[in-house]
Length: 261
Image (cartoon, rainbow, N blue to C red; front, side, top):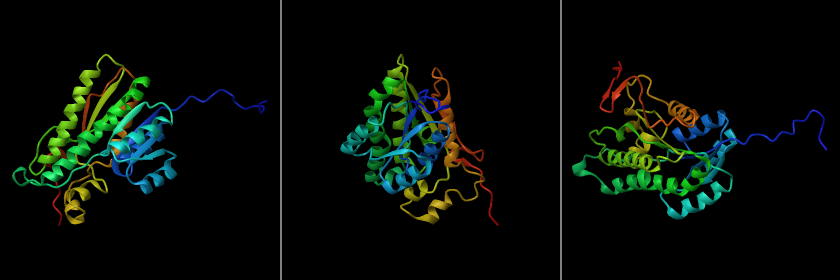
């Protein structure tokens, strides 16, 4: 028995995206942008309190996981796939640690960056690949302009991001012929609340100095919009590589700064 005037046509299921590093910055902004565009979203990150706040705000689902931990990812995949089909994976989790010269580098930091930016990224990508194959889905890698050009003090981060980019490009070659999209988005200078703060070990003055005098660096929302747009393209369109910089930044080592009086 139905209520008069009630539409009994089943609702079209939303496409579902998984966003890693969803607890802050670009990841949280991407969750918001995709939900506003009609997606169902699963946020993945280590900090449950942040994910719970985001879920209360946006209605997203979330799974607590550390992509550098094999067992954590295995448990996360079970929880994610139980929610239903997966149409996109946005590999956003990552980070930079330190600004050491190569000849005096803390190689423990290099190892941590490689484990997060490369191994962790492909751990969750490979684990979700069967589900993405079922939906002819999309895999998005948020790399960096550091994946395209080196800069002094960035050796370990540059190396890890180059590796992520090249591995993603290799995956694109290997998957050709399958209806799967492999997309790279490489942000330039983005002013988020945590990226530089983490890089400088919590030193806020050093973190803030990265953006001193730069008119209008990118925001997390700018990159989230690039992700949303890339995923909104028709299925036959693959955004192979998209570099996004603020107007003030021509290259990683060439940024316009306004002198402060």
